[in-house]
Length: 503
Ligand code: NAD
Image (cartoon, rainbow, N blue to C red; front, side):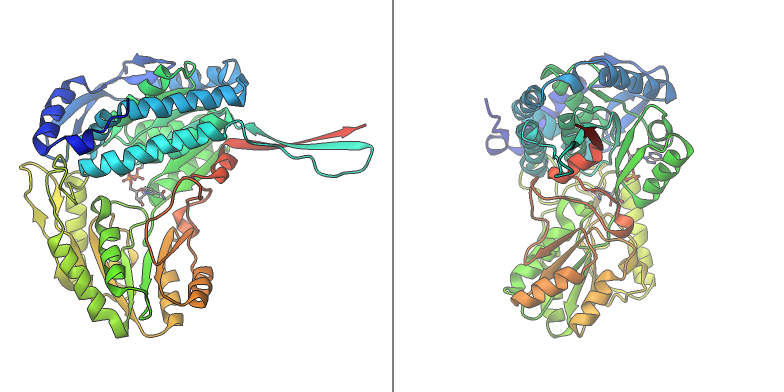
């Protein structure tokens, strides 16, 4: 029965549901198809909505990571999962998608409580992407083919893809379920087994997902979920000799750790989806300047600005700079920052007090460096004890200022201006990152030539943050390597084998 709680639940309903859900939240690891306690202590998961402790979750140390990897290893080496027919694997992934839909409101509520994003977005965006991703890879599992190149007549060559083995997946808190699914679904579809380590800020929804996957019929050990912090549990996965592939989404700084961990251990494959400082270029011939400004504002404040792809550098042509900036500032001032449990809220809580402190510090340094604050810049008290910040816009930002260079990962926009197309492209590419870029123009040639010149994994023209599971997602330069989503994600979880037969 599809769950349509979003259209039928009020703010009060969600608050009541939250109170009922909190005592039921999972607190134990999920290993080999069962709940498992840790041998260490437990850590609190605190809701950024109001600062209340949601749960005390078992804290994975090296021992728990070892147990989870051993379960995944057994499941891969001798268990049924890699040996099932692709069609049977697909059927189980489709059952996971169906169960996700059945538990949609509980999962969405858990994400909102642990992460602070609006319930409307958890429900409509995060949960839709989660179910779609499992469904898409479930449907894909038995539609893949290998190749046989045309070689000499007395030979037969086969080029086949085989599952890579045990995958360690380490993910952040900003889309705790979607980003996990972008790794789990293709890895499982390929026949790999997985140990997932969610962020210590948002382990609850991932532990729930682990239970749902087992309930859907995934064989024990095919998916294990351990909760713990990065420097202990994340590091242990990164260094583990029995992990064949480490797939990571998070900051560029931590991505570097995983490359080192692989070099210091078994040279496991390391796939990195990292940070960004994406440019959004507005040319005077944009088809609709008001739409460009509205989308620029929506893009940078969506998910509280906690987006790797956030269009955090707005590059506007001198001729339209004030018109576009004023429209963005106006949007910033009218955005409904509110209780994440209120379906009318457009911007909820940042992921915790440390996030608010970090954003505040970026704002302070931005002003100190000489940028002009046009909107926001302050903490907000929305729900007592919560972590809220106002939508913030700076203009008069110059390319060398920290506001133009550092990933803030919060609701802060830096506006820079340019006078020529070449200058815009140079500014856009003047960054260590290369995750995404936006471009607004009515000219077809400009759209194509500029898109080619932008060093970014995704270029959006006359839109931003659009797409679906069919297209690859990932970064150039220090935004990472490899791609999530689409057929290309399977490349991360498969080894390519040549079999050459003398006939
Ligand atoms: P983070 O790098 O601090 O943490 C990500 C994960 O790594 C968490 O599970 C954490 O526990 C773990 N970790 C932290 N330190 C570790 C260590 N020393 N060893 C091993 N594991 C460790 O990132 P975050 O704060 O959770 O997320 C924000 C970052 O993620 C931003 O930089 C953002 O751009 C990036 N991000 C990238 C994408 C993408 O697809 N490219 C998507 C979302 C977020």
